[in-house]
Length: 157
Image (cartoon, rainbow, N blue to C red):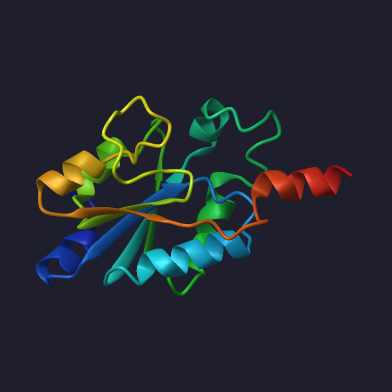
């Protein structure tokens, strides 16, 4: 059962819903470019945001996330290309994807939309499910030279 009123409305209006997810800890030009390109694939962009506890389980480093989930959510919501941000606490966004049933699921350049092995680190979570209901999975190339890890490293130097 879909629990989010905006998404219910968008579906009733026949809008193409694009979904992506991530940590988006220290927002940089790579994130913004990625989110803009994702938004261009449909009518609305829904971002699944990793909760602080799920970021810790991703082993991004002991200091991560640098910004708490509510701060990261507020920053994402301020972007024109983002229509909705939903925080999720699971290790993957699969249950959120199953609930929203987006038309399109998108990930960044280290993923591969054609990989079907769920254990492969390049697998786009939810891609098989979205394809089963007639949707698509896409991978958007990284903007080279930008990553939160590199920003943290630079700050330490």
